[in-house]
Structure formats: C-alpha cells, structure tokens
Image 1 (cartoon, rainbow, N blue to C red):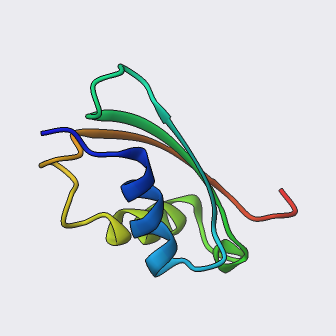
Image 2: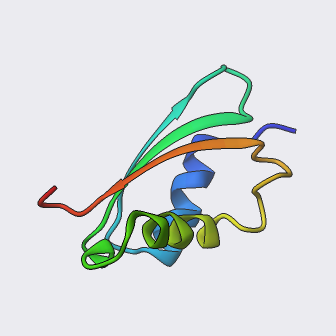
Length: 78
C-alpha cells in the first residue's frame, strides 16, 4: 500500500507547524521518498535531533506504509 506525498507533508506539519516541506517520490512507487524540511524550530538542534523531530511526526507510518525516507533538514537561514 503506497503513501501519498501530501499525507507525509500533512503529518510533518501537524507536529512542526512552521515547516516548509518538499517531498519527492524517488521510485514512483509511493514507498520511497526524499523530503526536505525547513523549520525555525530546528535552530540550536543537531542534525540528529532535527531528524528525530521529523521521524517522530511520521512514527506511525515509517517501516510500514512509508518504506524509506531520505531526509534533509535545515533552519530558514541555512
């Protein structure tokens, strides 16, 4: 069962409301995506902590409907 890119964006924004989210379907199968998430809430956090915030937003989907996510995070000024 594939996951829609819009649903990924919705889940991320539900936990990180100020996020600017860009999603790309890497394989055209709805299972392998790349996401870029930019948020002021990442300021002062390590890259690992930033990724943990995003993965927390997707925790119910990761490894199931959403098989793989290549993730890039940044603050707005980066």
